[in-house]
Length: 452
Ligand SMILES: Nc1ncnc2c1ncn2[C@@H]1O[C@H](COP(=O)(O)OP(=O)(O)O)[C@@H](O)[C@H]1O
Ligand SMILES: [Mg+2]
Image 1: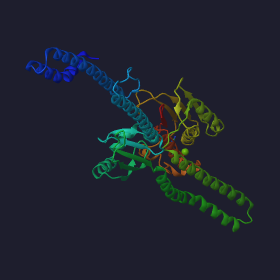
Image 2: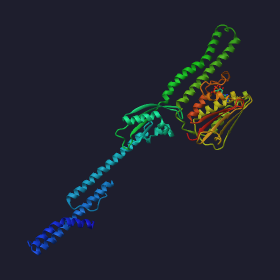
Image 3: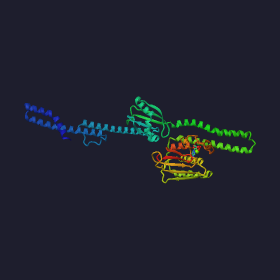
Image 4: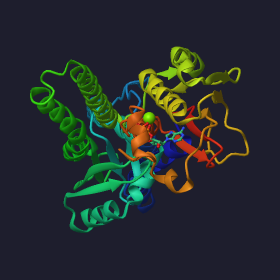
């Protein structure tokens, strides 16, 4: 108990009766003896009342302080109040604080539930703060856009939608076309929240990836156009031979054998074309999802290279493979990278020179090169054939683009091999480089990131 407070309370309670008694005494209305006695009794009584009050009020203050600190108010103050009304008040405060505590923990649980819902929602979702900065990005948006979230938010169409959501305080929906790192069609919905979220979030931005739907539409159109064009020639040839076999060559055994051979070749060509188109469309469907597993590419390439052994004699080609020691694993889809290596080596054999040498290598990017930033591994396929004229290089990976159509067809090519390579490399967030000097062969290099 603080003596100063006790003294002040004593004075406040005792001062008026004391002055009254003193006045009466001085005026002669009260004899000195009873007067002094009255003053002493008043002083003692006032002291007792002041002591009780100060004690109880300090208890009350203490109880309130505990309650406000949020701690269990009930880490109680040792003594009990002496005035019954004060005792009731302290009990009331304790009950109030208990119910506030349980409400606070309910609110905490609700906030955590909100957080968990936003975090685990399968839709890519951003929460924007009142100043339009990103307050939160949920797991789906982090997986889909990784480090590109700031770039997505700089998209002018999205920025305008956000500004409009703010000025009109209403939901806005826009279609975005994101060019990097792979082209994506995204529907962005900006939901302005009024009132804002408990954590201050002012708007939600839902980024739904529509690439797949758009791509399927586009692919269907491409497929029909390309396939009809590419299939027409072999089909016309097969129909022609059927006519001939039915008519003029009906009795010519030798011609029949020859024509059936050609027809089988044409059918084979159609089958290869369809296989390549299907594998291209399958890759395109997953192109925006990088592969999840990590692989040691040296083993995979060794197997691919070994698979070419039986075909080397035909063109008297030497095929060598070398891999640098201790290369890091890279995120990769084994089937797709097998396809990349197969297509590049096949081209080197087909278009390289007879009796030439094809080198397949797996290395770290050499420091002088124009590789992307970040750790990577480079798969290169080099041949010493006639090479490719510079003018063709930018278009090589287009579907059905061939430098020499007749030669490609004769070699059983569909014109889709490098398009498939490009799409697989894109899916791996890698880069394909083609270097060639006419007459000096070419090098196809695939740079793959170590961190996908
Ligand atoms: N190593 C190479 N040397 C020379 N030309 C090549 C080489 N690789 C590819 N090409 C050219 O690029 C074209 C496209 O290759 P690709 O997409 O694999 O189709 P395809 O092999 O079915 O014709 C080929 O037709 C060929 O003209
Ligand atoms: Mg090819």
